[in-house]
Image (cartoon, rainbow, N blue to C red; front, top):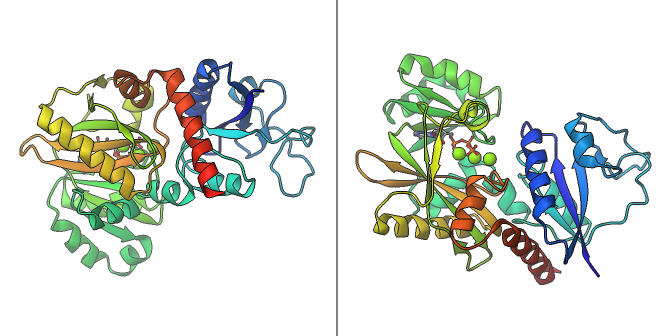
Amino acid sequence: EKLSVGLLFGGESPEHEVSIVTARAIAEHLDSVRFQVRPMGIARNGVWAVLGDPFARLAAGELPERSDHPFLPLEKGAEATPLPDVFFNALHGAGGEDGQIQGYLELLHRPYTGAGLLAMAAGMDKWITKRLWESEGLPVVPYVGLTEERWRREAAVCLAECAKLGLPLFVKPANLGSSIGVEKVKRAEDLPAALDRAFTFDRRVLVEQGLDVREIEVAVLGGDEPQVSQPGEVIVADEFYTFEDKYLHGKSRTEIPANIPEELADLVRKLAARAFAASDGYGMARVDFFLERLTGRVFLNELNFIPGFTSISMYPKMMAASGVPYADLLTRLIDLALARHAQIV
Ligand code: ATP
Ligand code: MG
Ligand code: MG
Ligand code: MG
C-alpha cells in the first residue's frame, strides 16, 4: 500500500510562483514505488485546490471557490477528499514557513516535513533568531532591533544607537525573505527614510552593521544528529544579493564546494549544526553565513527552513554534492516527518 503524500504548494505569500516551480520538481522526483502524490495547491485567496490538475490551475492564477464547510479552507466539491497520510510542505514565506500551516497540520494529527511550529515561527523572525543564537554564544553581525512604536517615540535615541554600528548599514524587516525590503544605507542622513520604508513591511526591523563579505551557505538535513553538507558560495554580482538578482536577472553565480580553506569549511559546518540545534531545527535548513573579506571573520546571517528547493537550487545541489541526490532527499524528508510524528504522539 502506497503512502499518500499531500503536496502543499502555492500559498498567499509573494513566493507563490516560486513554490509552484518547487512543487512540480518534487512531484516529478518523488519515489513512485513508495508514495502516491496528491497535489494540494493553496490559491492566492487561501482556498485549497485539490481537484483536477492543481499545478495547472494555480499556474493559471485560478481562484477556486471556497466550500460551505465552516472550518476547512477546501474548494467547493472537494469536501469528501480523504486526508493524506503525510504532508510535504513546499510553501515558502508567510503562512507556510512561519508556523501557521504547522499548527494547522498538528490539529489534523498528520505528520509533515520540516521543523515544528515553534522552530518555524522563530526561524522566520531574524530578530528572535539572533537572540537565540547570541544566547548560545554564536557569532551574529552587530545589530540594533527596533519596533515601529519605539522609532516613532524616540527617533533621536534610536539613531544614536544605530550610529554606533558605523556605516554602511543594512536595514531589514524582521519577518521577510527574498531580500524584500532589505536596503543598504551608506549615509547617516538616509537612515530615517530607510527605516520608514522598512516599517511598511513589518512593525519590527533590524539595523545591522554592513560588512564587506563573501556569502557562504550550508545545507543541514536530519534531526538531533543532522547531516551537514560541504559549504557552497553565492558569488554576488550586484552590491548585495538583491531580489532582482535572485529572481529576475540572476547574475550571481554559485560554487559548490565553496573555495575556502578546509579549517574554515569545518568551522562553518560546526556553526551550522549548532545554529540548527539552537533554533530547534528539524528536517532541513539552509544556514547562511557571512565571511568578512578584510578580517576573515565568520558570522551567521540567517537560516531558511524552506530554502529554494527546485532540483537546481542551492540547498538540493549542496546535498547532492554531499551524496544525497534529489529523489533520496525527498524520501529522507518524508521519513523524518514520520519519525518525528511517531515520537510526539
Ligand atoms: P533570503 O532570500 O535568503 O531568505 P532575506 O530576505 O532573508 O534573504 P538577508 O539574507 O538577511 O535577507 O539579506 C539579503 C542580502 O543582503 C544578503 O544575502 C546580503 O547580500 C545582504 N546583506 C544583508 N545583511 C547584510 C550585512 N549585515 N552586511 C552585508 N550584507 C548584508
Ligand atoms: Mg531569509
Ligand atoms: Mg526565505
Ligand atoms: Mg538570505
